[in-house]
Image (tube, rainbow, N blue to C red; front, side, top):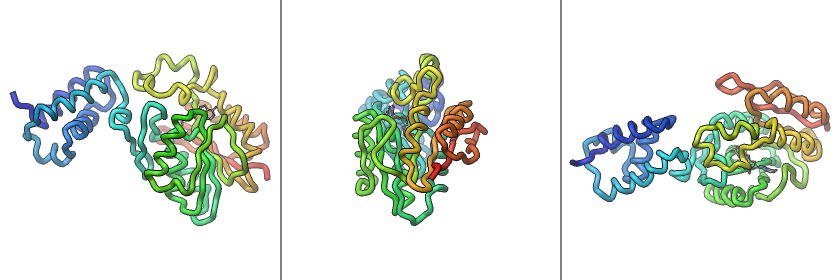
Length: 280
Ligand SMILES: C[S@@+](CC[C@H](N)C(=O)[O-])C[C@H]1O[C@@H](n2cnc3c(N)ncnc32)[C@H](O)[C@@H]1O
């Protein structure tokens, strides 16, 4: 029996629903596009087009991975974030939509045309730093990560976006050499004890990118201690925090003499970004 674009879309949607995947309709469409080499427009305007045996085999190879709950971004090898697209693999966290609030905050803190040095602690794929540099032509950046393989991916993303002339990447442990006009970080903030119960997709992501220690706040202790030594005159910082963590992190920042701005809330109303300035 022949398989058409629309019949395949329907059967894949059902298979993904059966395994509890979050977005069965979109996932099915994206894997048909990637495996069969067709466009969204083809699927919508030519739904009864038949697929060849080779196309079906290529789609099936991707579908099996998704049925095992591998994230769609790893299967496709890419993820759209803010105004850029990033290559992603299991060595980096998949950039999350809520992290776009950190980018928005960073852009508010960076005057449009002034030269600025930006530091991203825990740079991962480069999502935050590269989004900011893409919007601020006079800014230069440094990305730090403890994971050498994440740094390789970030460097490849910088090159693909033609931003490699304005950014450098180094291995480090929540700190860097020099002073910066803006320090950004989206560190791991999930409590170690909560990791086992996370959705199956998260188990494909690097533990180092998720595990925030016993109370989820280990990275914030290190980062807030390092911040006074990293901020230049009138330097600013912005940190993403997990749900319910804003007050504890704000207290850490105040203890080391940093001045805070009001928390920024995400679309769910969760205090998500903590920003402020150094003492100088
Ligand atoms: C939540 S991920 C954020 C990645 C990326 N910035 C983003 O927002 O998509 C945290 C990152 O911190 C890195 N990391 C973990 N421990 C670190 C440490 N001690 N020093 C520096 N980076 C670390 C992880 O490898 C990971 O890339």
